Image (cartoon, rainbow, N blue to C red; front, side, top):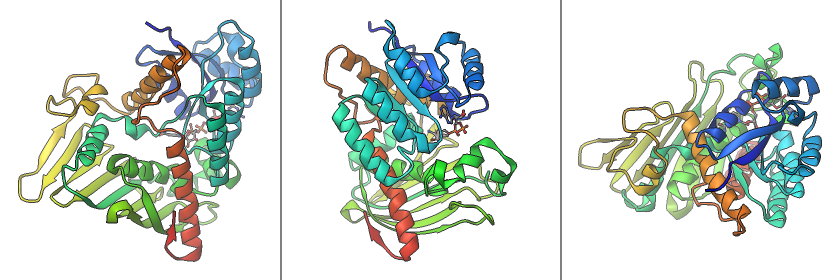
Length: 379
Ligand SMILES: NC(=O)c1ccc[n+]([C@@H]2O[C@H](COP(=O)([O-])OP(=O)(O)OC[C@H]3O[C@@H](n4cnc5c(N)ncnc54)[C@H](O)[C@@H]3O)[C@@H](O)[C@H]2O)c1
């Protein structure tokens, strides 16, 4: 039995959205413990978060550089760093963590810009240390099932995909009220140039490539900033060309009033199709060309090995967002523990890593270029 890995968090200060989710998910399977953090730029707020997370007050640091330096000198240093800050810090924090010898679990998007992602790719390759990216939806058991069905060509050749990620929470100029999450997301210097396309479009893009196993090869995207004065896009409609002759659509919007977290994927092959919706994640709809429509339920004994491997509860006990997040952590913890025990780092193919990170940033960059030139652009 390997010991629990020790995790240090960057971001996740008081009032933050995703930092506390990372803690819950990382600790769910008993393989990781949050022991340190630079939770905020402000020392007081970092200490307050440390207190709320119930860690040793001496391990709530004022900055990530201080955390890396002080942890490095401890007999029981952190093993991995989770990055839960606004996007502009993803590259510098990952770079500094890897340079100190810590594994990195980063939230998406991988960086703020595509150029930064290329740099990060080099940094990860040179460091030869574990790096993973929390594209949360890849952790759902029925997303794993959908991926397996596509891999075994259950519907024949894939012809068409439709993915959408619709939210309504930025329908008004929320960023002008000082709301924390809206403020940095609407500032290109902190967020990067892609608004909705970066914040949620990257999740949709990742889900599409993850499930189908096909790369997007060209895009024709129209981006808009619907809310007056907004500095980044808040609405995107895109046509896609994929490998093997498939085509598709991707919609990402944060001004779809009334929508909450409407991430939905449909994949159509020669003989049938599948549909998955993240607000109803324990059901996967499978339709045949001639046969009746089927609903696959999470934890069903008929599911494939990949889906059952990430199922914790008997059917009918819904698993959700935190459990899906925790699947990624569990896979990462096992790979990091094996690496710590002397093996070469070998992440499972199911865990998003630097390739997914660079693909996502390329997607944002290509979508913006397509919108600018009002034309198809290749990847
Ligand atoms: N995987 C997902 O589904 C998912 C969901 C939400 C957010 N995210 C990503 O997570 C990241 C954070 O998003 P959020 O909504 O939690 O933002 P947030 O504004 O709620 O939290 C960001 C935190 O980072 C802290 N921070 C800022 N600068 C810092 C610094 N220099 N040192 C230490 N801490 C610092 C802030 O104080 C804050 O506590 C973003 O990259 C976002 O894209 C991913």
